[in-house]
Each structure stands twice: as C-alpha cells, then as structure tokens.
Amino acid sequence: MNETRQIKIFDTTLRDGEQSPGCSMNVQEKLRLARQLDRLGVDILEAGFPIASEGDFAAVQTIARTFDRPVIAALARASEHDITLAWKALKDAAHPRIHIFLATSEIHLQHKLRISQQQCLEQARRAVALAKTFCDDIEFSPEDATRTEPEFLFEILETVIAEGATTVNIPDTVGYAIPHEYAQLLTNIQKTVRGANVVTISTHCHNDLGLAVANSLAGVNAGARQIECTINGIGERAGNAALEEIVMAMQVRADYYGVETNIQSSELFPASQMLAEITGVQVQPNKAIVGRNAFAHEAGIHQDGMLKNALTYEIMTPASVGVPESRLVLGKHSGRHALSLRCAALGYELDRRELDDVYRKFVVLADEIKTVQDHHLEAMLRELNRTQRPALVKKPQAVKSPALAAAASTSGSKKGSRFTTGKPTVDVVARPTDRHREHEDYLWGV
Ligand code: KIV
Ligand code: ZN
Image 1 (tube, rainbow, N blue to C red):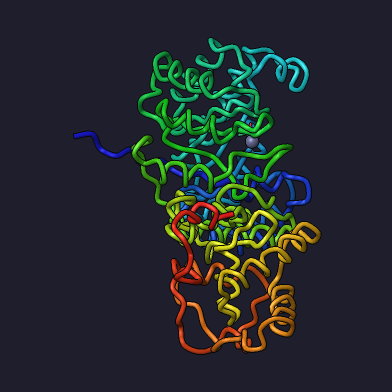
Image 2 (cartoon, protein in one colour):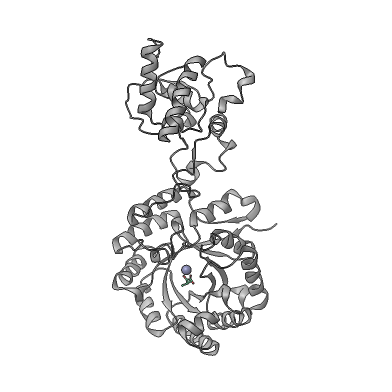
C-alpha cells in the first residue's frame, strides 16, 4: 500500500514576505505573527535575514529562543560574515537551520555578482562547508534556478549535497516558470543529480505571472517534499506562493494530490487577518480562501442553492479555514429566497405579493447603492407596513440554522435588535408561503 507523502510547509512570511513593500515588521510584530504561525503548524519558520538589520537579527534571535517545535531558519548569502551572523542569531534554537543562497543564472552571475560559474561553484561549496561546522540542517538555494543553465544547476546542486546540504530549494525567483516546465526541472534534478534522493527537494515560487501556487503544486506532483510560501502570498513584487491556497488545494483535492501537511487549516484565516492587521496591507476581497468574498454569495441562484445545501456552491466549509460563516450579500443579483429569509430574520414574514413588492424596491435600491443593509430593508418594510398592511410585523424571531445565520449576518445586524430576539422559529429551507408554486422553483433564486 502507498504511504501518504508528508509535505513540509516552510513559511517565509517573516523573511521573503517582509520584503514586500509596506510589509516590514518590527521584533514584537514578528514574534506575535510567529506565535500564530506556530499555532498554524508550519514545519519550518524562516524568521529573517540577520545581516539585513539589527532588528532582523534580534527578531531571529528572539524567535529562535521562543519556539521548541518548528525548525527556525535564517537566511544568509554565501559569505563567511553572513553565515557566522546567521548562526549567532540561531544558535539557541531547538531546531536551527541555516539557509544559504547564491545566484546561479548567467544573467545574475554576469551582471550582479560578476563572477564565473567556476567561482560560483567554489563559493557555494565553501559556504555550505562552513555552515555545516555550525549545524546539521543546511538548506541551499540557487537563486534564479529556473533561468539557470540546467547542466550548471545540476553540478552546483551535486556539489552542495556532497558538502552536506540537507535541503535543496529550487527558486523560481522571478516568477518565470510554467507549471509543466517547473515540474520537468524537478524531475530532471531527481534523475540527474547524485544525492538528490537523500535530500529534501523544495519549491520556492514567485507570482509574477500569477503561477506561483500552480508551479508549487506542480513541484509537489514532481516529488518536492517542502513548499516555501507566505501568508496572503505577500512577498517581493507580485509576491510568493500563498500558503493558504497551497494547503487548501492539497486538502480539498487530497484525492488528486495524495499528500498531507501538518497545517491546522482552521488557523489560516486568523493568520491572514493578523498579518493584515500588523502590516496594514489588506487582502483583496476576492482572494481565494481568506478574502472577504471567498465565502460570500450575492447571485440569487447561488444564494438559493446555498440555502438548500451549501455544497452546491462551496467546496470547503468556512469553518475549515477558520472563517466564521458564509455570508449572503444582498445586492442587485440577489433573489427572493435570500431576501425573504433576511426579512424573516428581521421579524417580517411576507407572503408572495408582499415579497414581490419589497423585492422590486430592493432591486432598484441595490442597483443604486450596490449592497443593501439591514437598515435599508427595515425602512422599506416599515413603509410597506404603513401603506399596505398595518399588521405586517410578526412576532420577533431569531435565526436557527447556520445558513440562515449567514443570511442574517449580511451587515449591521445588531445584537438584541427588536427584530432578532426571541425563540428560533425559521428553518433554512422554509418557503415564505405554501402558495409558492412548483413551476416557480427556478425563479425563486432570481
Ligand atoms: O526568490 C528567491 O530566490 C529567494 C531566495 C533567497 C530563496 O527568496
Ligand atoms: Zn523569494
């Protein structure tokens, strides 16, 4: 029987993520986020780049001294000074890792480092040998690997493995790779590089073409056992591969990937929120997994499906990623079903004709203001009450099903409001009236 492959999650939010404009963090902020990353269950936590600043050195040192479970990594260039300093910051960690990088592509060697391939090879060898005198766990990253001549890449990987590197990371530094090509590169490394079978092969993908997550997952299919990624996908330029997307792709599609991680997925949303709060950089609303709209439904047909069975439009539960609940947003695409439930949650039970009246006004308003809030609805309902049906307001009601709670939570629903107190009486699939005819079923959603 095939054993499920374990994929290690290497979080670099505090290092590569922090390199994102506007995302730098001080020691206390890094420590606070590190606690959440620990709760999340990341296997390796890259705490910083000690040579970059005194603050980063202090952050790595503090984190190294605080956490017993995860491996704590620190980044270093392939130089004696960087490596020695990285070790100084790391040495009190229960599980330290020195992460050395050196560019290997011709364009970086010629224009940035101004060294030959031979010099690069020698520098990498010496760097790993030095780091190995400090600790066992050494990661080597050939920067810009995906634009490096494959033969040279294989040679340098073979060299650092022979010196004792235990993880070799394959960075797509400029987000240039295509999934199929990236997977092929990893396959070729495993076929060609002596010693590749005894080390951990890692992915590290940037998002310049929006392919960072796809490339990382292609890497997993090609045998990678570690993925480097960041919360909310923050990082240089277009960012790094988003941790939450990678983890949930492997979890929701476990049937396809057949791998496991140690991540507590219900800590994903809290981690995302905490990062946004610390950096002040908000998550785009439609961001997969953690965006404000990731579990929000506005279209009437979708809302109708959701209210009948959430599996119709959600492939994972909000709770599985730590999002409090699904939201049914009342906008111009919403249908009568969600509207009637929202009115019921506000204490108004409408018959079909009343619902039609409110619906017509609602659509006009939604067209104008995009999202209709509870107070707008209440004003409409009061107006209807005044002009058409003096006894419209029924007994106060509360919400009993989670889906209805979602409908009830669209916005601004105040606890203890006169309409939402009292006994739960409304069921999720309850139709507003028995007169509702079967042939209208389809229209109910629109
Ligand atoms: O993108 C990159 O190449 C890096 C390395 C330092 C691993 O972040
Ligand atoms: Zn990077």
